[in-house]
Length: 270
Image (cartoon, rainbow, N blue to C red; front, side, top):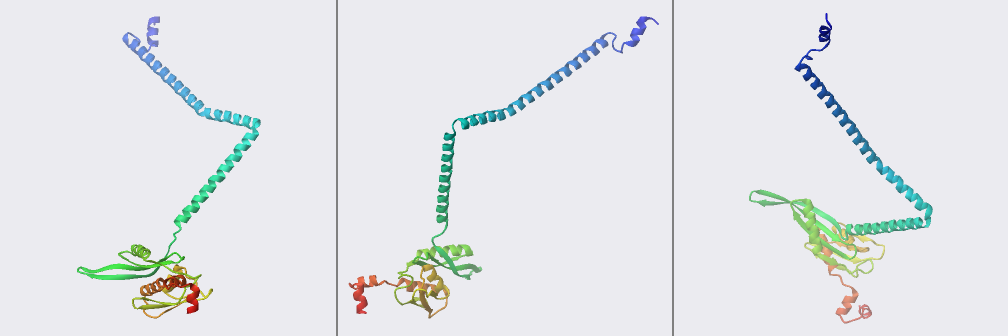
């Protein structure tokens, strides 16, 4: 075989003519695309390195700040001590203010009036379509400082009935003329078919009463008293009778002023 035939056998297919040129072009394009990809990867890696360096910059800044602070501490210790003392004083003032605000909030949240439910009744009303159910609540409201009131509330729910009762009781408040911890004189109060006898008592006697009369006297601020129920035992009527008796009480000064007398003259005349 000649040398030309041997070269033709060693050359790949497509090297003859146009096929060989196309194959070379394809190889060139592939090599160029690979180079571009490699360059892109290098660039992306460079960007990542840059971002990493950017993320690592804050610790360097922090270190610089710490150095500055250490320099300040070494140079001016007195100023730092003054700053620290001012900061502690400010924190104490803030705590005091917060404490005052919390105390004020607690004072606002704590209600001045004490509410007690004496009776809750289920009431039925006959209507054209049948029976309508509702609730009636008897509530006593007082501040234990000489003011007390009785109220009634009616609603389809118990909670709303109690709320209405509280509003009604606050509308009909009565001030009790107390002499130390007891009432000035004996009196008989009436409410419907109920009668309640109230008598003054010595210190240390306590409240000798029961039922709704006791709750009225406790919330009114009476400490020592004797009482007796002489009529109906209905809680609402008994409460109204005690309130009626407390409302009609009078002090010696008021009676003496009405009679144009002094208290001594009135006592000696009696």
